[in-house]
Image (cartoon, rainbow, N blue to C red; front, side):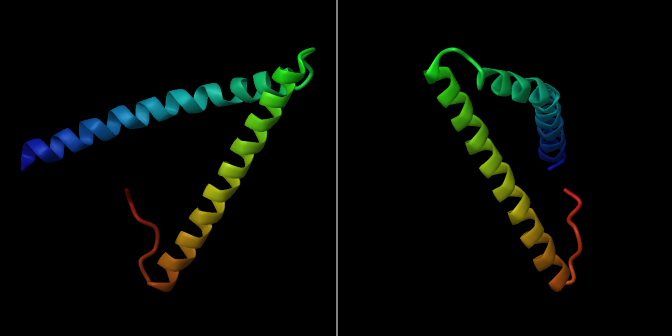
Length: 83
């Protein structure tokens, strides 16, 4: 049982580190997509626009879902989880 607990903690730490790395590059990625909106190639501009729209929608949906989950947890008297 101790091994499984330690393994889960180590796996979570590795995942947290990977996510932090992705977040660190997010601002640069957005800048790159925004710069691509001015590219000479219509194909590049369309792909950049689609990428921005898709990720904007996904972020909005994740935010809305998180807000709904918080409201449900508050109604259930659970508060925020500590995961």
